[in-house]
Image 1 (tube, one colour):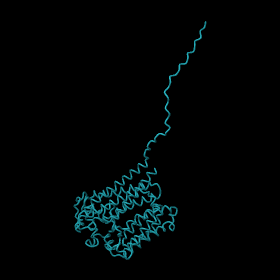
Image 2 (cartoon, rainbow, N blue to C red; image 1 turned 120 degrees about the vertical axis):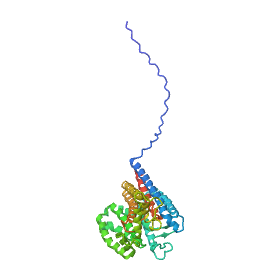
Image 3 (spheres, rainbow, N blue to C red; image 1 turned 180 degrees about the vertical axis):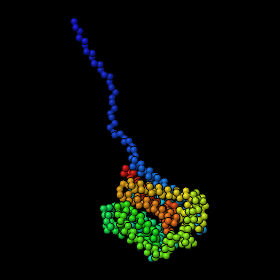
Length: 406
């Protein structure tokens, strides 16, 4: 008998604990890693701030040394000019911080109003009957006193760069033409330069046009147009130089510094003596001999000579390195700008700082005729200092915008 095996009964499964309902809320997003562009932008901004701080601190120290004797000779405390510069620096830091937080594209919309405002201030400076707010100092009317004294020509450098960048972007497809490209810019550059020249301030007038022309050239204007402009401008400028006897004397002193060393060539010779006395390591901080009334404007137009005397070749290389750093950082920010306007504005602000610095050095070393160019962030002068801080603020704004767009 065959026995069929029974199929075993299925055993009941043990009761499973109830599964809790899933949390259908989306998971918290992970923080996104900073993009390389944003990281580079932050690094450039920090480096620019650090470089500005180094230039300012070194300049305050050296400016104090160069100005202490002048202050005491005027029966003022030795730190008088350094303290005034420190106050202007505090205002400049605040100004740069505010501008850096603004969207630089707003300046494109404000270009015309700012230009008109600067033109009106330049007119007031030279207008007869306005001596109460535009006094004549050392034979020139360059200052406007509206509760706080400042030079509109310094502000004009900044504003004309912004205006030129704005119009260069607007006329990008017409810059190859002389009549529709360069001429519209000249219709604004020339009147502004003439107003500055009438203060009189020929060097500032030429610098304003130079800085603006460099922005336009970077925007795409033809170099041949600038050559033609230069050929026209040279005889006009030379005629203005000949009209003023003191300008011709400065040219003569530049061409032959050894002639009339106690007259018109006195200042440049004292500058060369200061630079030559520094040697490699300098005579030491505070030990300058030229600052004791031998070199006029030692704390302003010839501060580089004081640096060379007290710090020697080491100080000279340090100052050159600082402004070379401004050049590299500024051009990097310009090259990485989010748009063409940012590129041109950043380029112009960098040129404003760096070109002025090297012009100052060139005058101190008798490579250029004697004239008034300050050493940015270092020389005495509140108006110029605020202008340079404003330029740094614009550069930081461009760099910040690039970081946000990344």
